[in-house]
Image (tube, rainbow over all chains, first blue to last red; front, side, top):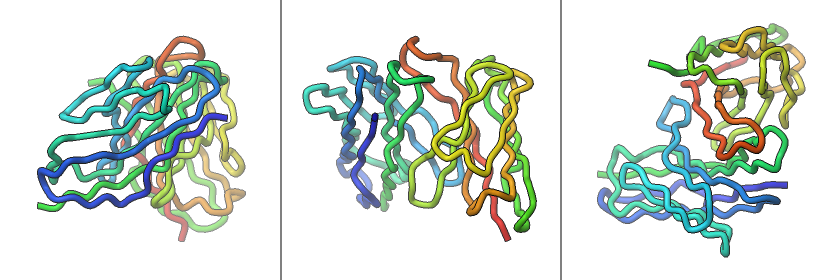
Length: 114
Length: 116
């Protein structure tokens, strides 16, 4: 079945540091890939997505490139801020699976210190 | 503004009691979902519904029940049969069905259930 693996957190960075959160996946079909963000005490919000190989999703300074050859979708940001502190979830949806369900990774907590 | 409303935000329950969590959306989405989130863990699918009057079990449906009598509403009942119900519950909706492309979910703010 489909699965998503993320690097375990927490990831602790100083403000303006470079961020990478690794995400790899396995899927039977040709999935779409997503990053969601969850701020403390809230639900998840879509951060960015990519629907085909070599697509780059971007939003709020975050980027991720769909790499089919390495089955990866790593999240990057050049300069993090304290306000980026949150939990980040990598996910995929595979249209070949019943219901086109999303499969989520375990989440990675990011803590940015001033 | 369109969105998903979950209530209550916090709920306390005594052991042996059933509780119902509300989820309402005004996005005109066909599909709705319930997820459970435990501390430090990812999301696990409880139930989902792709159309009114129809719903399917997810990965951890035991001890839960749902109904989908209206397109806008998808309440979740946590029954006394659920052995460890303390968790954060997230409702979501989407307009995508199987085979129609990227399934982008919109989430509510969540309901935190604590069993005393």
